[in-house]
Length: 116
Length: 111
Image (tube, rainbow over all chains, first blue to last red; front, side, top):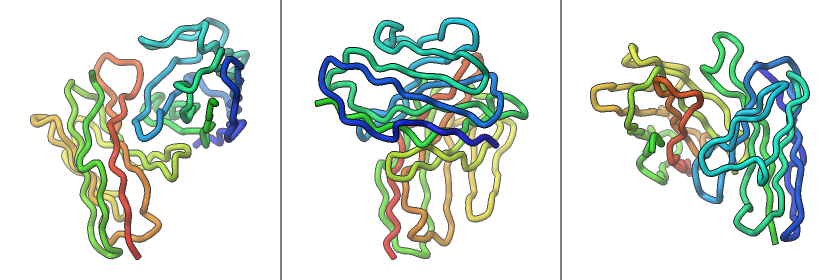
């Protein structure tokens, strides 16, 4: 299993500002993912964070709005840029299982973002 | 969309009763997983069932999978107040690079 530390756990931000969310894993992992969960909704994958290369974004999500860094195999950040109230959601980082890969996901505790 | 649909959306039962949640999906899958989420926090993996399996047990959890109907069910027996949470199914679709999560069932177990 993996221990995933995600911070901040919650934040209240002003419209037009940006917030960077950090995700630290206690061991090296190949696959790291960022999800968004809008109020009362299911999880939607934003992007896959690739170590040493640009993230792979899902349809409807773009790098300018959600820049992602993955400097090594244990750490990633997601930035929510130029925020609007529609960005109010829970943001979750996750990593795939180790043996075999990708079969199950481990999640951080989430970042609850409110944009005023 | 490959997202699964779950029903019911919400379920309220008395402690000690069994809770059944259903998940339907649209595409061929490698496996189907169930996760639990407490109060909008991180999800916790509960159980995985592969496409060639029909039933799986883990403690008080029983999962069934019917690939011909593209559906799965999660049964929680002898429910406890601590089982109160949202439950999501997630499909590992053939040819996809990520899991697709269902719409979720909000379970409330009344003490």
